[in-house]
Image (cartoon, rainbow, N blue to C red; front, side, top):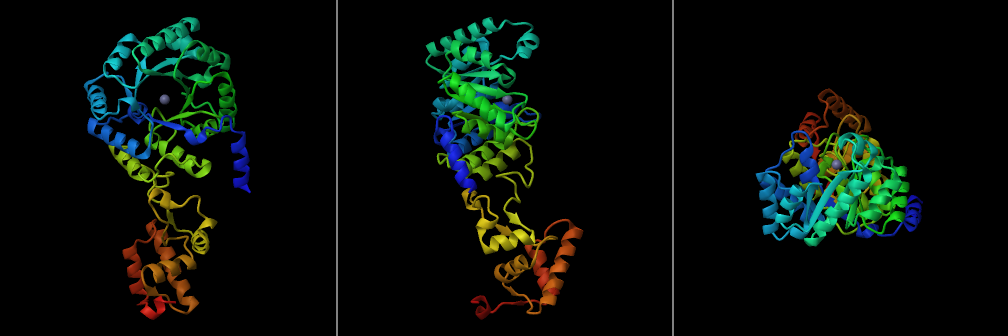
Length: 398
Ligand SMILES: [Zn+2]
């Protein structure tokens, strides 16, 4: 039923372009802004390799402000990746010329357009002047043969008529809609994007922050309403609580919206690599990348999965190159115990149900005391303690 409803919703989606959605990896720009995150050129290039494996469309990097960025940009060019490189610049001629020197396919100009940015950050800049300057800049960049992404910083706190003015006056090749302070909520993100898509034919890209844990929800809502591009970062690293996690957006696109253009198999390895390079550990239950998301301990879920995976399976772990792993801990039950001890470890549980209950109680107690599920070697000890016999070939055939 639910799937049917989703199908109905898909029909009402703004332009039906979801299957062609394009991804910008902003890890090497936004992720670098996170406190304490600093990649080496080698690490950055490894992240780019993962981007390419997955099918990311653009790689966002800073203008060459230092030796690091300059080396990175030159290496990307040497590897023939100029057309996939988006160089983030402030609205300053110096930044733009430095970026143009490295011949990227795309340059991004970033400019705050909300009242608070104009009044306080830019000390009273006039909106007309800002838009005129943005427009001139875009034309200047176009005259050098580069595509231009116009990043409207803080646009979710900007009145829609002012965004419409930017769409009208600035000839960007795409516009980035920035939820800089995470003010969106998913239904608002959806309705708002529908409205924006009525105001321009130019592609719109989401760049949503995660201060309230809504970044992926807001991003997917905006995609369903017609946004053509997404900016996200590996593991969601970025300013403060970060951004939409690239891997979570891609998994949602594949499983919930049927988008087939990305390869999900490298996701978990990539997340682990970025976590290590960014010195930002992953929680064990983080969607997509958590070490324990395919471990099942509770008796109810073990029993359901063993009967039919569809009972408790949000998506097949094989999509990410993994399989379900049944583990025995304080909440496990008889079905899981039988599966792990009999079928995985090859023992034969006693026929007497009371003895089986005793083994289960012992495992549960031990797990509670130790505050972890039992490892395979601890289960071997359990088998020894309760004198379990290995199953014969005849038993195994049963
Ligand atoms: Zn940002």
